[in-house]
Image (cartoon, rainbow, N blue to C red; front, top):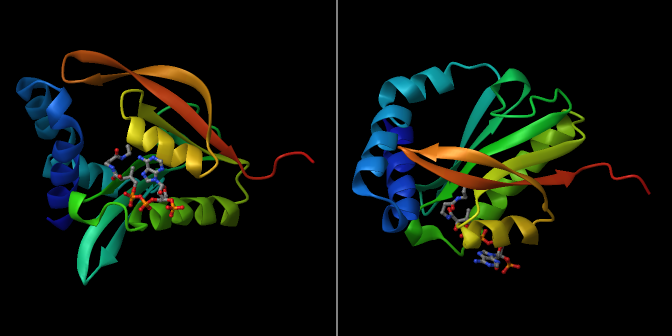
Amino acid sequence: MELQKIARETFFDTFSAENTKENMEKYLAERLSVDALVTELNNADSEFYFAEADNKVAGYLKINVGDAQTELQDDNAVEIERIYVLKAFQGKRVGQSLCQKAIDIARQRDAGYVWLGVWEENHKAVAFYKKNGFVEFGKHSFKLGDDEQMDVMMKLELNPPA
Ligand SMILES: CC(C)(COP(=O)(O)OP(=O)(O)OC[C@H]1O[C@@H](n2cnc3c(N)ncnc32)[C@H](O)[C@@H]1OP(=O)(O)O)[C@@H](O)C(=O)NCCC(=O)NCCS
């Protein structure tokens, strides 16, 4: 399954250097199994998009609305749950186009803001979202295998008051 292939590869590339093998395997087995992904695909409040470059899948985006949002669950918001770009395609604005896609969808839905949680140690991603106008508004905990980690919560207001 194409989605599982890119999801596993990008997750592994991003997190394997800083996490134990056991915790990585647990996450891949539980959260990125075909069953888990099919359940996510069948959720009407979640959408997946692939980005292509050179006729290959270069990255993907997962967004959530309504009850599918991992937190907040504000009907007026859209969550970016995942933006992942394959290593070979990073730095070529693929991430940028996926982020823009999420923002465009949020505007079409008349959402007030787009939000996301990103691991606080993932400095590259935090910098990427800042560059795209997201600002930090809190923290929440996230489990990678047995390891409790901290996510930075960030949001982009779409209709900020003048
Ligand atoms: C973070 C990530 C999505 C960025 O995607 P990308 O395709 O590599 O980034 P882009 O080429 O679209 O960069 C877009 C802009 O952000 C900037 N940017 C990218 N990485 C940056 C960094 N580390 N620091 C500051 N700015 C950065 C780029 O300079 C670019 O701006 P420019 O066009 O004005 O030069 C990608 O690196 C990735 O998938 N990383 C691994 C997975 C991950 O951490 N995902 C987020 C957690 S859910």
